[in-house]
Structures are given as C-alpha cells and as structure tokens.
Length: 277
Length: 354
Ligand SMILES: Nc1ncnc2c1ncn2[C@@H]1O[C@H](COP(=O)(O)OP(=O)(O)OP(=O)(O)O)[C@@H](O)[C@H]1O
Ligand SMILES: [Mg+2]
Image 1 (tube, rainbow over the protein chains, first blue to last red):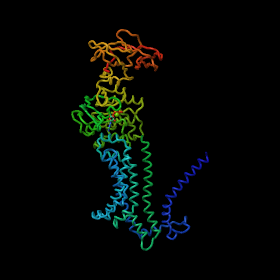
Image 2: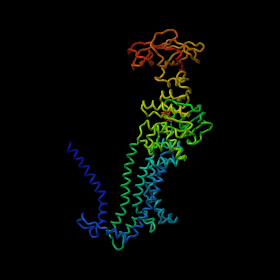
Image 3: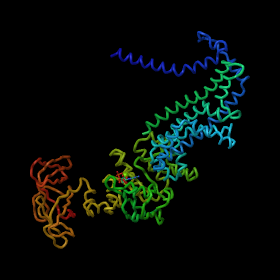
Image 4: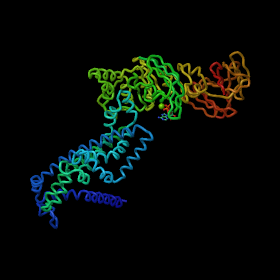
C-alpha cells in the first residue's frame, strides 16, 4: 500500500516536472541567453553559471530603434483588438444567453462553422479591399482582423458564462428601472468578469504574437514586434543572436506577466462563482 | 397607492394556453394571495402584472391606468423573487439603493430611505455585507428591503418564504403581515403554503389550470367552497370525498346515502333523485359516535391511527374501498382493523356534482 502510494506520488511529481521542463525550458533558454555575452550563447557544453551582462539590451536599444516602435504598435493593436473583441463578445454573448429563436440558434452554428475555415482563406481576398479603403499599414486593420477572429469563439464563451447568471437578476434590475444596456453594464459585466478576462487572455496572447497577418497588412507605420524580430533574423550583416534573444525576452515579458496576473484572477473568479450560493 | 383590475387576462406561450381568461378586482391596500397547484399559472399571472411577461389578451389596470404595454419600472410595482435575486456583486446598501441610483435620486434622500428600510427590517448592521455573507432569512429581508425602498403602490411576492426553514418562515410571515399593516400598500402574494394563505390574505384567489376557481375571504373559501377543487385545495388535511347517491330532494335539502354513508340530508341545490354526487366532509368534523337523528354517519374499519398527543389522526377504509381521514382533537385509542362509526354535523358538510 505505502509503496504504491509513494510511487503514485513520485509519478505525479515526475509528470509535473516533465511538463514544467517542456514549457519553461524554451523561456528559460531565451532569457538566459539574452544575458550572456554573444560568444557564450552557443558554447558546448552550455554554461549554466555565467556573469550576466546587459550588453545585448544596450545594443538592442542603440541599433534597433524600430524594435521599440514595434512594441508601441503591438501595444496599440493588442489593446484595441482586445477591447473590441471583448466588448463585441460580451454583447453578443448576452443576446445569445437571454434570447432564443431560430435565427439566433442558426447564427451560433454559423459562428462555429466560420471558425473552422482557415483564416488566411478569408483574409487574402481582403487585401485589395483594404488597399482600396486606404487602411493598409494602419493599426485599425490589424485591430479589426484580430478582434474578428475571436468574436465567434468569444461570443460562445461569453454565452456560457452569462447563462450561469440567473435571469431573475435581469428581471430584478428591470423592475428597478434598468434598461438593457444598464443591465448589461451594471449587472452582467461585473458578474461575468471571469469570462471576460478569459476571452481577453486569448485575444491578448494572439494579437501580441501574431505574425502572418501583420506581415501581409503592414509595412512600416503599423509594424508589430514579431515582424521586427523576423527582420533581425534576415538582417544583411548576419544574425546577432545576443540582440535577438534580448528582443525576444522583451517581447515575451509583458504577455507572460499578463497571463500570470490574469491567471490569478481567473482562478479566484471561478472559485468565487462556485461558492456564491 | 393603487388597486388593480385584471380583465379577461390571457397568456399563451406559443400554442400552449397558460392563463385562460382571468378576472380579478383588487382593492387599494388589499392583501391578495394566489394559491393553486404547481404549474397552474400563479407565477405567470404575477409576472404579467409585473410586466415581465407580455399579456396575450385582456386588460390590466393598476390604479386607473391600463398597463398592458407599460415598462415594469413605470407600473409602480416592486417584486420579491423566490430566489431573492439579490445582486451578488453589490453590498446590501447598494442592492437596496440600486433602483434609486438609476433614477438619479439625490444621495441624501437615498441614504435616508435605505436607513429607514434597514430600520424597519432590522438590517442596520448588515448594510456593508455582500449577499454571499448573509443567512437565508437576512437575504429575504434584503430582498424585501429592495422592494420597500421603491415605495411601490403594489408589492408582488412569488413564494418568498419557500426557501426558509419552518421557524424562520413563521417569523417572516408575521414580519410581512406587520409590513402590510405599516405600509398600507396593496400586496399580491403567491404561495403553496395553506397557513400563509389563510393567515395573510384579505382575499384568496384559487387558480387551477389557468382559470380562477374561486375568490373570497379565507374563511369563506374554507366554509363555502364553490366547487370540489377549492374544497380539496383549501384545508389540511384534505377534505374527505365520498361517492353517494341522491335519494330525495326537498326544498333546499338533498338526501344522500351510500353503503358507507347512512342516509343524511345536506343543504344543496341542483340535484335530482337518482343523481350520483360527492359528499365532502372535513377530517376535523368527524368524531366517534353512534347514529342518531340529524347526524351523518360514515362506517368503516381503522387502517391506521396516529397518536400525536394533542390530536389523533385516524385513517378509515370503507367497505367499498374508499378512504377517509378523521382528525380527533384529543388523544384517543383506536385499534387498527376494528370497525368504527364516525358522525358529523350535516350543516358543515358539502355536496358536489360527481
Ligand atoms: N416561458 C415559458 N414558456 C413556455 N411555457 C411556460 C413558460 N413559463 C411558464 N410556462 C408554463 O406555464 C405553466 C404555468 O407556469 P407557472 O410558473 O406560472 O406555474 P406556477 O403556478 O407558478 O407553478 P409553481 O407553483 O410550480 O411555481 C407551466 O405549465 C409552465 O410549464
Ligand atoms: Mg411559481
């Protein structure tokens, strides 16, 4: 008995360790490499103990000003896309949750089907249209595109969350004199906050890291960080791996921080809902 | 303050007719209780008055105003839900003041009204708590507080006490009665509970299958039920029903009998000799005794006797397999399987069409 329990415990520990290694190793590798002098990065065997240096970050600042422009663009696009996707998903989820009808039910199926089409198939034909509208190389085009990808999933997710909020709350608010938008903002949104954060996490991570559409629709003014990083790899004077890892670390940090912070909220939100009673 | 008039109200959900033409007049300040079996449409009717459900046909007047197409907030009503429906993310104070805040009532006035409601309902200590940290009874009081604050002309309650335990129910019942006296507002109250209906109501409306069966003062419904449904529904334990045959009719009195029931004359109309009928006798009217002129008699064998100390509940099985219940207001020994005769005053018995 005891040995069995012990071995189960050991197995669990090993599994978790493997999982952690699998997901954390690349991150650790990038962050550590960014702190090593250039010639030590690919040393064999790798040096685990070394004197950290910030020279890569200094060079990044001095030689790749465009990287920081990219960060600003990424921030604008991510914030915009997230705000748009979250608002649209919440409104749609509310309507889906509180109303029934053949048209509405059919449109849910449509939302799912649309999600199954590879986005690139719909996106490429957009190129001439966006060109004609003069939206090429603007933040708006990426904001709208990224948000659009998540509204279908987000709406369905939000409906599930809002379904768990008793309808009597809407009705009580209605009797208290609230109009639909007030009910949404003052009753539904605060109670569906965990769901809204969950959708936000999806959109933030996607928008921050997205490469292909940014590559297609932006050139200089709205260029996001992933594009700049890719330019570093294709740079004519050879790849400076130290700078590349420094840039990757900077690119990684905010999302990582965001997800970790939100994760705490997400877990708290879920357990709070469970014990509300 | 306002009375209500429901005229030929109808409600259909798709093809399903739920409320089938309901007429009720409710006076200003009256306490009206809707009772009826589960699914008969009590909540639906209440929600139609509140404006949470569209009215398919008919007219609803609150005060002098036709309210069919009026928004709930404009009807001068407040509703207390069975599930309380408190806003979980708001404190007790904010729950109660939500409506006033929306209508941009001055802060000072909100404060006064919340304090006043909190005083009436003994919630002063709890104003900063969230609903999750309240007991069932406290939540119920907050829900009532939220209603009081609006100073409505009409209060609507949908089974407000059914989630509370027995002791708390009694407290809250008295609280609601006191509130009605204090506020003088019209109240409409849906319940399953006989005691709540009998004690709170000025007027009871008995509903079945979307139709009004009878409207009247509690004691009138108990003593003079309009039909067999009302007779069986009001009173606990249920009225006994026994199949009988009409053997004689003379001005205002109908004589009936059956193998179980000795020939007895009951005040009734609309029967003729040879008709089948149903005799209704409340369990509390039966007592052990011998046949004598002027008394009704039911014969059978005791199938179960429950001695509760203050009273004894006897189940009787007749020769034809019918069952009857007698509630004897004292401790008495009945032997299971023994033959008994129960007598009753025919004045208090009822006769219904079979
Ligand atoms: N939105 C709806 N769509 C279709 N049918 C409904 C709807 N709401 C209620 N009903 C039906 O209307 C009937 C009456 O419901 P209602 O809730 O008014 O009953 P009730 O008398 O309050 O019962 P209970 O005592 O169980 O609360 C039920 O048969 C119910 O199934
Ligand atoms: Mg109901």
